[in-house]
Structure formats: C-alpha cells, structure tokens
Length: 547
RNA sequence: GCGCCCGUAGCUCAACCGGAUAGAGCAGCGGCCUUCUAAGCCGCCGGUUGCAGGUUCAAGUCCUGCCGGGCGCGCCA
Image 1 (tube, rainbow, N blue to C red):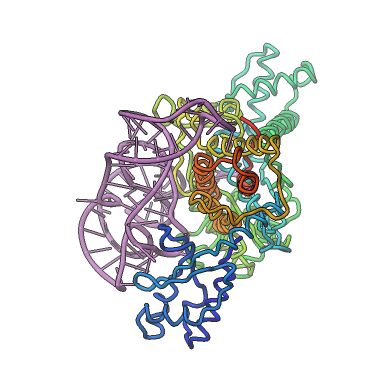
Image 2: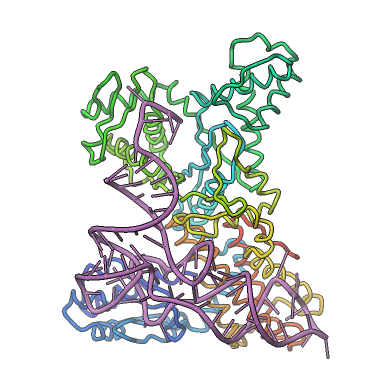
C-alpha cells in the first residue's frame, strides 16, 4: 500500500498548522532512504521550505513534526535528521495490515483506481507488412505491451493500436519481389528487382500463390494479387509472433484510411488557414519554423503525393478526436527528429498535445561474433523475433527487452543469447515464486493452515521485517513505472523482493516450527508469492508453480 | 556542421522530481546442501560516475564547454 498520498496530506496540514506556506508544499516528495536507519520514508520538505519561510531547515523540520498528526497504527516514529530531513518509520501494525490486504486482494494487489474512467491508447510495433518482425522490433513490441499493462493496472482503459501503411514504394517493391519469385518457380527467366526483398519468406509467399493459382498469374501485369497475398501472409505471421509474446492488438489502423476519408487534405486546409502552409518548388511545405522548429518540412511532394508526415499529423488528430485522455507513441530513436514536427502541427491546430507522450527508446545493437551487425529487412540480413523466441523462450525475450531503461542502448550478443538465458535474472524471480509455491504445498500437507487471524506479531526476524517492507511497495512501484513509462522499475523492484525472500527462506523455516509461527510465516510467503506473480504479470512474464 | 539520446565497477546495467556512505547481476576468489527447491544463501575483490568549469545547504542527476558512441538532419517510411 502506497502511503505517500496520506503522508503528503498530513504534512500539508502540519505546514498549515505551523503557519508555513510556500511553493515547495505544492508537491511534497517522499523518498525511500538508502539506509535503513533513515527510516522507511523520508522527506526533504523542510530543506526546501526553509528558504521560503526564512528559518533554518532543522527548525522548520522541528515545527512541522510538532504539528504532524499521523496514525500511530501506520507510522510509529518520526525523526528529524541530518541537515533537516524528516524520517518516518512504519508501525508493525501497518505491515501486518498490508499482509492481510495482499492476501485478501490476491491478484488485485498492485492495481489501483488512480486513473479510473480515463482511456489510453498505446500505439506500438507499427511495422509495415514487408517482412517478419525482427529483434529490433522486439524491443518496441515488448515495451509497448508492458506500458499498456502498466497503464491498465492504474485504472486506464487501454487500447493497443498498430498503425501501418500498405501502400507506397516499399509495398510495390515487395509485390514485385513476390512476382519475381513466382515467375522463377514457373521456370521463367526474370530480373529480380534491384532493390527487391531477398528474404526466404518471399519464396514462401510465391509458393502459396503457385499452389492457389498454378501458372494463372504468369501474364498478369497487375501487382495487386501479389501485394495482397504478401500483406495478408506477412501480417498473419506478425500476429502469430506477437501472440507468442502474449501481445494482442486491439486495433489495426491503416494509414490509407486517412487518404480515403480526406482527413489529410483537411489538415492541409486547416494549416493553410493559419498560414502554416506555403508552396515552393511545386511542393507544399509546413512552416515549422514559425512554431519554433529548426526547419520547414515538405508535406506534399511536387508529384502530388503526401510525405508520411502528413498522414502522421492526421493520425494524431484522429487519435485525439477519438477522445483518449492519454496517447502513447512508442518510437525508435530514428523518429527523434520527426515527431516534434507532427506535435507542432497538431498543437497549432488547437489540439491538446499534452495528452500525447512519445516514448523514444534507443536501438538494439546486435552483436554477432562479437561485432555489431547491421540488420536490413530488404537484404534479409535480419534476425527475426521468432528466431530469438525459439532460442531463449518468450519469458526471457520479454524480460530481456524490459530489463533496461528505454533510454539506454541495449546490447544484444546473439552468441551469448542462450548462455545468457540460463543465468538470466528472470529465473531468479521465477525460482523464488516456484519455491514459495512448493513450500506452501508442503506446509499444507503437514497441517500448517491459513488462518483468519494469523499471528503476524510473531514475525520479528530482521529478514521478515525487510520482506514485509518490500511487499508494501508494489502498488507505488507500479504507479511510478506507469507514470514514467518505465517498466524496468518493476524488474528492479521484483529483484529486491526476491532477494529479500531468498534471505528469509534461508533463515526462517516454516516446516518444523510451532503452528502459530509456521502459519504466520506461511502467510508471509504466500503474500510474497502474490507480489511476485502480480509483478511478473504486469511485465507479461509467467510465474511458474514449479521449476 | 546542426538537433536529440547515451557515457556509472573488468562486462551488462540500477540509482525514484537534485538528497544522507553510488547499488545489483555477470566475471574472479573463498565459504554454505542428513531438515521447506543450491536456478539459492553468505563473504571478499572491484568506482576520481568520460574531462573541465559553474549553480546549490546538497550534483551521477541541473547549466556551459570539450571528448567519445548511437540516431537523425531526403519531395524515403
């Protein structure tokens, strides 16, 4: 249970009682001190308030504490420390109450209602159907899905959307590549398109066409059948790959629908009304520089064909008009210089762009034979996400992409993939979960029972206390991870929980202890199991009953 | 050249909105299985947080400048 909202209210009331006011009271920050002697929560509010009220920090802290009214069943002790920190210590009764809460809420523990009634749309993957998903797409897919899960945990109603483009040069090239392979299969000499897609999957699609149509397509000039078949088969494959990672999209949004509805041309009209459009060299330009961008960009080429930015603007307007309170875009680092143009245009048309949050993650660097490996879908020099899942499994794949913060480069050594998976931290968490499941089974076999009123007050061992304190944090960690769009925070936290459990396990036995203590410890173990399971569920990683 | 991101232990990474003595895993060394799962636990080793300034009671975190790496800078998506 996250005490911070409660503490913040109490401190604000105390400040008022003490006659303090200042900007630093707007948001009072509570942190978990690194050292246990500094308490379970600490706040620097007195340090920040001191210059605003013209008193020494420790004096401010002293007066705040004097007026502070806290429930002794939650916080047992308050101390002023160091330069003026206020440290707070949990009451044992609070820890016991949290244990009871975890056990009664079960799979619901960790979920909150803080965003109840709000709707979020997470757009991710969004790979065009020109080939299988690669390891590079994996980070996007897993990150997007984990963020969707996190948002759902805080009460959002979440839609997962996949935006794609099935028109244009890439798709034409794809269709031409399929046709070339098809003609090859018919034994007809053919020039493979110079920039064509060389992957083996193109041959598979050609085979499917051969089986369905025989040589009936040999003379057809229309690429449509090749394109449509390729698109359908590739999408089916993508959906299957995502499914293997427990990712299910709610919606596929075709960029082309923005052409059909005329939405893109309305964007041009509306930008023109605001004098943000001009024509030069036969092209239509967006005056980004008028909005603080460092350059203007082309929205419609001199050929009359829009660049991708125009539908992008229309797409974001569409998302906002669908009424989402929060819109997340998960983009690779290559979008870093383009999305601000889109946001600038959308904002200039009067839309609330603060609802849009763009998560830019850094690329996955693939190492092969210790060397960086350049992937290209067109040249078929990619490693597919499926191959990775085959190699290390879905849990490890997901965990691997979530372990690091999105902003750091992720180095992926293929040659060590399998080896690394055997010592992957994911097993550390799953092992703890399986271990608990086993203990609880055994304990119940020998007659240890869950009770209505467990003797939590018997849990006095330092490892028991540390573990209980860790379990308290799950809801707050999920809240913060969702707020910052950083699933790795959950992993860091679960590692602490698992470590605390393993230590408890080595020092505190259940079997062979007297019934009251054994039962209390079994409750603690079971609560730990629930925290691990719920935390892993947010990450989309399984929690095995045995290993 | 310009813009954004990154630079923390030998390696891969944490460090919550600027907090108190910068933490894990892996690698290395040494211990712990006749009792609930050793995929575990305990200990040791390992740091001028790229460099130089600045702001602050307090800087890995903010600012400036350099150095190094990634990505972008197309009427490609």
